[in-house]
Length: 121
Image (cartoon, rainbow, N blue to C red; front, side, top):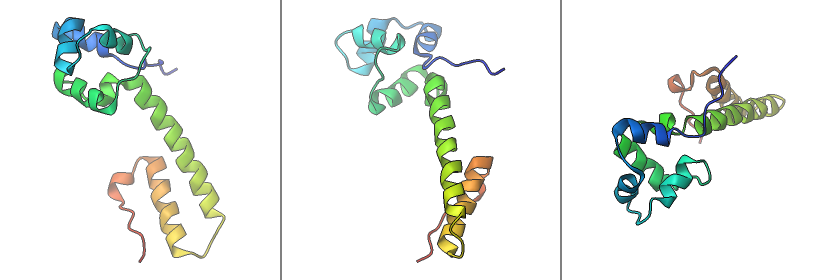
């Protein structure tokens, strides 16, 4: 069985780099380390700008820093991709819809990098 991931690994990577919470707060442009603590204890999700700053500061990709959130978002998105593909498949004959379905199926299989969705003008 797949092991559940934590929402984020900010504390792990901060400690690995040897930074204190006040030091990371300074690097993030915050005057208090309380926000860093709230992020690390899953009580608050940082802004997108702060997330990218963490990536730079800790030298770790965002998808690793926020592995649990990323994993959950991916599962939900893929579920919705499959649902939309099934809904669109029911409507046949429209070449635009068929291209969308093909693209959605590729996403669901993990082959989306090979396909590019280009709407028909």
